[in-house]
Image (cartoon, rainbow, N blue to C red; front, side, top):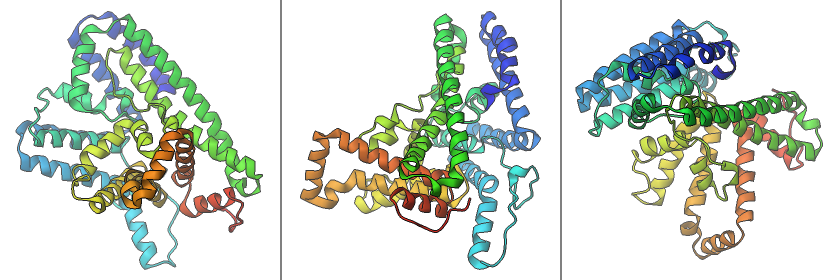
Length: 407
């Protein structure tokens, strides 16, 4: 968490005052670049910095050529780098477990600090880097203008407020806002940004407090009373929205203090009255990226309901795995993919019955809200816990008595 470290305090005390008091575009951009480079190199380490430098250099040079074949190759290379760093171990272990179920897998992981070709150490924020690089190359492939200044490309790549948890940036919007902001940053930007930063910090502290309780309560979930189990589920839902939106608020607020506007990431998603609206409000920069560069690239819903559903399921499977290399993330993504397929097509699928349901939900939006929240909260079990554990916790929520839960 960059915003809760001494490095952040040092930046606020040293580099930000320089940025504010030097009224020139060039020095301000250098200050931003230096700060971003320091943050990235410190928190990522050499194993995280070198791959990003190599990937960024390749993407930058390919963009300059504007060659469609090279852009396509760069997109594939970026995707393969993400697969290699984030999913090699998951894929190999899954294959071994399916082919040799009696073989025991060592519990060590890349996070232990030692990597190998089978278990490489993922560079910090590799998922965000790759998605932003793919977006950049796709836009160049479609005829967009490349970034010709390597300083601007570096800032797009490693702009430090958004480096760890987003929002996922689009290069045209970011560079336009950056170039305007460094010239015209004012006291309103600083005050609005500080307020947003403060709100994010409060959310993050609240999320950490809830996390401490859920981590304490989870191993004894089966011993909790039924009402306490449902309270636990509500706490999971609060924990993730406060954590994700809190970091986004801090990133957006810190960028705004520099006169730069990052895209919004959350818009009261827990007030959504159906699942489609929920995904229009939840992690918006990511969901829009998934829509634009996966779902629509596959054809969207242009070829009938069956193709629309299959495209949606594939897009959300990727969305789930993007969050982590484990089966529970895949299940969570497919769970939402199925939910969205039903929410978006039930009128056609069920005919008059579907139309009648739609009319009732339009008259009683609170029912739609309750159904959406129940669906979303159940999904968080599979987001946070292994599939078997999440399934047993789900059964316990409805009074069933599954096998004991082991974490």
